[in-house]
Length: 519
Image 1: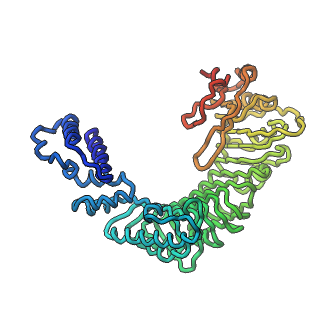
Image 2 (image 1 turned 60 degrees about the horizontal axis):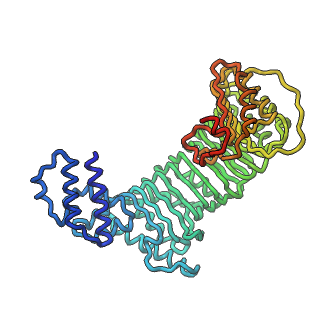
Image 3 (image 1 turned 90 degrees about the vertical axis):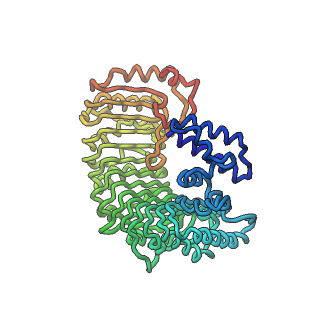
């Protein structure tokens, strides 16, 4: 294994040297042979006569050469066909193709808008020539970031047809250059031209519905970023891509209503993040398991039929969605197992709470919290009898007078095993809530109190935001008041500035008392 790695690395360096027209001297060849002899126990001195001192690379196998070429950018990999007759077709065995318009164009000054149309046609012409040279080979993955506009749509769709015949399985298209978004538009019928396509990412273009669409039974993953989605386009995709499992829409411009409906939909994961224009989303998806929605304002969700939906994330930072979550959402989705919400919070008291009878994990990230007792959250806990994990993050801008509330009798929570509080500052009402959890969770195993707030950034992406640390007195007071208060004999209380998380990327705080205390 080490021998193969050494040969591959040295050969890659050699190819780069050839590409920039630097001759390999005989001394380099000598050390190359010497290294082979040291690393390979089966290498005998007599084998040195097999190699020419002037050309070691030509004696490597085609598989090693192809592996070397695959490490080059597509433009340089193609240029290796000029090195020698043996290399003429090796680049065609590279199945991962990546291009930008600068790879396909030479000496074209993209400085004025009048040139963009000409550049778009030139990009498509160059791409067409490249694909025709490779008509008899397979392309597994294709990525293009280039200046493509509406004038070259028909020609570009012909290139897509070529890719489809080459068995392409992954395509990423970003239709812009230098942050200039152009007007390239795709209709849904072009999905049918790629019978083996499994993943498609479209960025900075338009997606139109089509009456002449045909079924695509291979596409499983669709990602739309900065795409202008026309009315009916999503419905057209869902009705023709029958194997689609995951759909992600980020910063798209959408019609006012999106419909994810179909009696035979296999859609399991749906992400809608920071999309403009949408006001209503309707669901009839029997296989949907995960739904995540992020927007500045809340929209209307119509959950007609989602029997498999287990995990939901809803974020609306300009509106208090707790009344909706505790009311209508609990009625529509009573069998949820995981609920994650980020919201502006005016007052917990105004929220009427229905039962989440099957909820196991609860994540609440609150912003703009008034000076009301966090004990209002105890009512939420009472509506989740099977809750096992509770993650509370307080990104708080405290305002208004302190709202007094009579202390409630402790209601024991026998299933709660993990409690995590982020953004904890050690205020009176935060301490009161933490004490309530310690005294009511009879099976509690872990309670983490962190000064840093934990923020959800997207699918499986959490981060800890750095904030000012506690003072030494505050840290000592938190520890003194909470230590030893748990009714659970197995409870482990951790009080720290930030978790011991390898994914936490913030720089260490040398002056942080909490960090010093932890060390």
